Image (cartoon, rainbow, N blue to C red; front, top):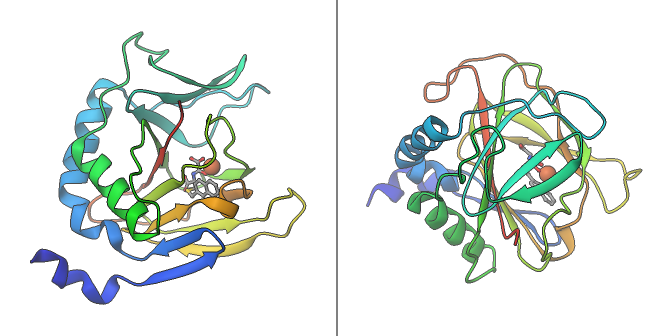
Length: 213
Ligand code: MD3
Ligand code: FE
């Protein structure tokens, strides 16, 4: 079984109550994930969205699944359609749904069936400032995040914006499951350092799976 090849990389680390880092968990899915990602971005290309405050985000984003996260001058929301093409977001690839469900189950969340996958693409210098994910309807479902490509320093804050965040390095193949008391923690990503990754080139890709509707 191919999974054995990566077994030494598969450690589970509890980052905080409700937050479980599954080191290397996505590595055995990486080839089908890259294929699936190509199909998604062929239909729904990466784009830099604008925040309600009028700032162009340094991260490029797209979505797949029944609901996609979007931002523009009118606010943040989930939408069934891609505002750039007027079409529905591409369906969630089976390998994405399987990866998310298996990771969630391993962290204690059985039956996780995400209806949204936000895909973030970082280039060198791109960052994500401290925020909470609270546009979803149901906070009882976890969020599963998958890191691919270049490494990044993730900021794990507390439940208040003023809580000093902890720095957590995330590398290719890492999966973090955020549920229960961790679900509404502030979090962000420091500016990406330049580099080269064999699969993702000069980028970091982050997939976040959510139960949005
Ligand atoms: C902790 N993405 O898309 S993933 C986001 O690496 C987002 O692109 C980051 O924050 C990225 O909203 C971080 C880790 C993550 C995702 C969701 C969380 C951590 C979280 C929700 C609650 C608490
Ligand atoms: Fe977030």
